Length: 424
Image (tube, rainbow, N blue to C red):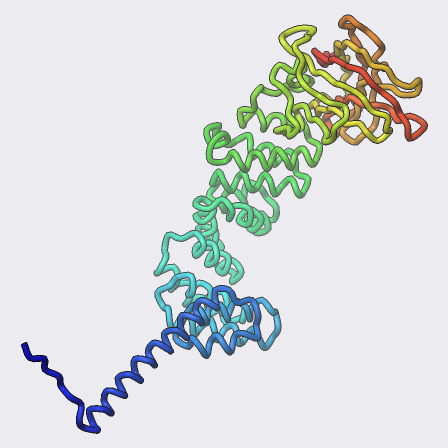
């Protein structure tokens, strides 16, 4: 079978082929440039790279968007204008990307051009009417414009309901607009539960503890243990930081703490629930970091199945890790601390291991006697009078008194069980 070839004899045909090859090379080259510019823009963090990137990818919206963001971060007056121009170019190239349109709206707002900013915010709302980012940004814009408070807070409240992270900012804006009136702030935010929890946390920073606790208390219990559990944990942590332990304990119980906590009661005083080096809260036993003494559960018990077991073998004054727990108590009340122990401890004359009760501010309220050698279970304890007012918590702690030299020999074993507080 014959093979036919079409020879290229004419100069015109050769020229056409050459042009086609050059065009193909050009397409490949410019495509590679565009891809390089786009890829580089995703990793760029230097302003001096912007001219290179935008020249390589003049039609790539990502490149211009990245350039705009980088220029905006310099806070230089000239760069602010350049940043706005790059945001505008990115929006021209990607007019239906709500993120780009929203960024341009914010850029116009920063530049003081409220008319164009509003137009872009409205455009972003058309593109993404249900997105919380758009609602919150536009609501904040309207609020700063004056005269649009109702619409502004409708948007902010809607954003806070969908995205809890906006609840905190919304709470601050509402309280400022309401002149720090909690009820009015709740009304502005449509009394959304997430906003109410955020208001409570923010009020603690202003030392408005009772208002914060009341806001949390009024929330439905199913939300406290469900959708708003993280907010409850943050609120409890803030209350502990402010040393309001009874309110913190109440919130932990709302979150279904296990075991349930009670005022004036040592949690897990018999160690039957075990101990942890990373306690879930201050209302559980906490063992300090370190190696001395060794601490474990033992099957010797005053009651129940286990006790807490310590093995001491140290010569150093700075080698001791303590055991502690914070207990919420009634200010001004009197309590009796009781504990049972067995001891095989041997130590220098000036070395004492014992229980101590501290106020939450660190002041010593009571010292228990040193653990003596005792092969059978014996009771020890101390009487406590809690100061009036705040803080309303005490710290039960196993300590070793510092001796008078760097060498503090102590060795042997200690079993501890059934710690309790009794109100007198």
